[in-house]
Image (cartoon, rainbow, N blue to C red; front, side):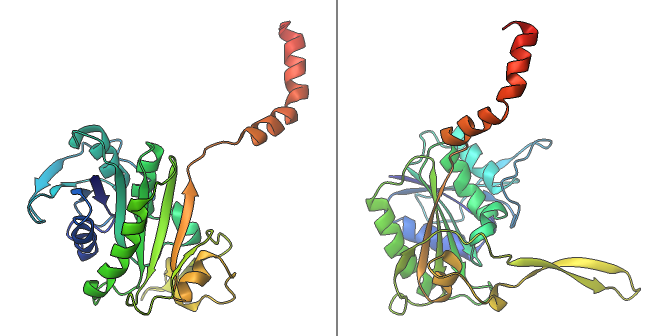
Length: 266
């Protein structure tokens, strides 16, 4: 099995190393990651600057790895189109520091890496850890939990055009309460702008992450399940349009199109 790994925290991040260590038990691992942190960069790609892919030897023998001066989406696209001689069987993105929940699917570079693979019909998984302090994480505690989840995923088949968004509670395998497959809670506004004055009285706005202060979370959705100590798995489908919606909107514009048909004698 060929497994491609990427992230948005950069190729030197210990969360990436932990993911690679686990996935080596399941197949041949290829790593293509940004050369520095690209968090919250969403699904952007590099259009106006050249990309450079530098092969590295940061990981153990048998792991092919490159660092790229681009975004997570760049990394996966470059891997699929150029760097890998054969396409991967699956793509993992992570392990991200800090959970990716609800609306984060539109902001996260970690999720964008997985989404880019799903758009090319390659099974994809984004993995994040519910810890906001990246400086003091015990990855020996995290790896057994990720191993168990990865094993189940690799034994099954992810539907084409779908990405799995997974969040791990920062706890031991023994204390984890289980797995909940739940929808994303899009009602939660996790990030809010707050105003701060500089020493000269100029007002600036910063984004504040209010994850730890959130209350009244909807049960059976991702925010609440993770808070309760469950691993959350949220399938995200990449379907762009639905036939029912297309038919409905065609009816909206029927009078306009009918007039045009009469005008142009179609």
